[in-house]
Image (tube, rainbow, N blue to C red):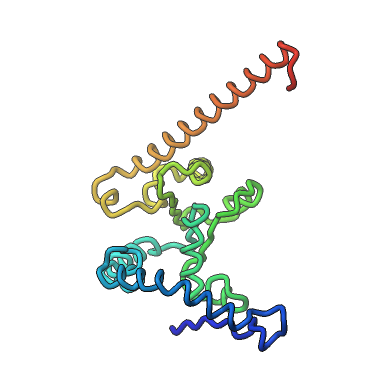
Length: 224
């Protein structure tokens, strides 16, 4: 796929005095030349690894195997994550027509859902309508402690339990290869519940501290 970036349509020669003036553009290019050379050097000697990531191919086989496990027998894939943990994947699946008007509804394979919208009503309705027995969930958090993702995960665990699928949580939730080989099926559920519980306790403590400060101010006749 070829990508071309062009600003021709915003140049002063094309749209008039409010466009980018040639002299200003060339001056900006000259100022950036040194930075561009530095990036090229770091790409050449691989000292800035992220510049080489687009060309890496060594992990494609592992990714392919993970995708096969994730989609086997699945009608729906639900990705739990916010910000970069969701947007990057959304950009990639659009190459396979996800979210593309007209084509999106015709794409083959499981339906993909990216729940980066934290509206609880929408999320609740999704869990009510999904065929949970054939849905697979992937919780994504680089830190492992993203509050929004933990709360989404806790909501999914509750929905699975209510649907009588508690014993299948280890199957319904995607786990890394190491976990798949060595963890008992219930461990993913216990870890997610423990993290969600810790988050709830932390928020409860902060709420009590806030209310306590409020009460002290009110008793002292200060602004509340």
